[in-house]
Length: 497
Image (cartoon, rainbow, N blue to C red; front, side, top):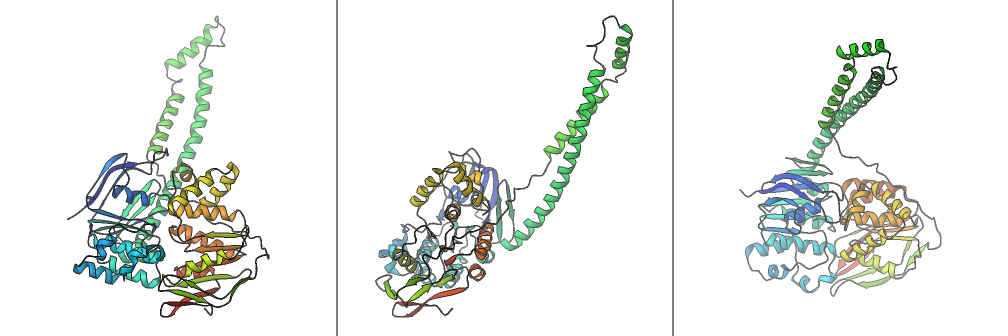
C-alpha cells in the first residue's frame, strides 16, 4: 500500500527566525485527509514541501514521487489542460463530463470565471492520476451546483489526498483523517473534521485545566522559594564572622559549632530541593497554544455623499456567448445586499462595472475575489512602508481575525488568507461608508470567517457581498440580488429576493 511519510521535518523561510515546522513526523495512507489550522499556521507550506516546491531545512518526505499540487490561485492556465482536452481515453472523457469542461475554455481562459477555472484545475489534477493529490481550497469560487460536481469527482480519487479547506461540508464529506496545525501543536485524528474538532476541543479543555493546575503549583512553589531564599540570606548573615571582633573567640566558637552540626546547611539544602522540584515541574509542564481574542469592530463615516447610488440599465458582454442584462438599480444608504448566482453569470463583472462608473472617493473598501501574486507582494510592501503606529493598528485588527502579527512581521509573503485580512484591516482604518466584498470567505480560516461575520452584522454602513456561502449571507445581508439565466446565453438580475 502506498504511504506518504514525513520524518523529522523542520522548515523555516530564510527571512524568518522561527520554524513553521520543527521535527514533524506524520504518515498518510490512501484516503482523503483534511489539514486544518489558522491562516499562517503552515497548511499551504506543508503542501508545497510535499509537492517539492519548497525544500525542508532537515528531515525527509517519502512516497511523494508522483505528486500533483492544485494551488489556491486560479491565475494561470494549467499546462496539462490541452493534453486532457485531446485525450481520448475513457477516463479523460469521464472527467470532462463530470466537471462539465468545455473545449473552448482552452482558448478563452481570461474570460472564464474563477469557478470555471477551479473546475479546470481539478479536472487536470484527476486526469494525471497522481499517487498523492494536494488540494488547496478546491471549492473556492464554486456555486452550490458546481461544488456538488467537484465533490462527486474528488470522491472517485483512490490515492492519498490532502485537503486544505475552510469548507466544513467538503471536509466532512471527503476526509476520513484530520491533521490539526495549531502553532506548536500538531495532531492527527482518524476521523472527519467535525468529529476531530469535538475530540480536539475536549482534549484541549482537559489540557488547559491541567496547565492551570500546574501554573498554580508553580506559583505557590515560587512563593515558597522566595521565602526560603530570604532564610538562606539570613542564615548566611548569621553564620558570617565578617562583623565579629577578631578577639571575640566565644562568638567564633559558637558559629563553628553550628557549622559542625550542619545547622548552616539546612536552609541551603531546602532551597536546592525546591529548585530541583521547580525544574522538574517546568520540564513536564503542558503548554497549550495561545488563544487570540477574536472580534473586530467596523466603523462607518455614515456619509450621505454617494447615496442613493443609481445604476442605469445596461447590457454587459461577458464572453462571446454570454451577456448580462439588468434593469435600473439603486443601492441605498445602510442597505446590505447579497449577490448570488451560478459561476459565470456575471457577478464579478457587474461589480467591476459598478466600480468603473462611480467615484467613491475614500469611502469605499473593495476586496476582489482573487488578488494576483504580484499585487499581494506590492500590497505587503505598502503595509511594511507605513509608520510603526499605523502598522500596529493594522496588525491589531489582523490578530483579532485569528492571525499572528509576529508571524506576519517575519513573513516574506503572507498566505492568501492573511493578505485578505491585511486588506480588510487597512481598509477599515478609513471607516468606509461602502464595503464591497467578492467572495470574502475564500482562503480564510473558520475562526476568521466567524469574526468577520459578526463584525459585518454590526456594521452601520452599506454592504454589497458576493458569496456562495449561504450561512454567511443569511447572517449578514437583508436583500438578495439573484443573477439568473434567461435563455440563449443571457443572464439578468432579479432583485425580488
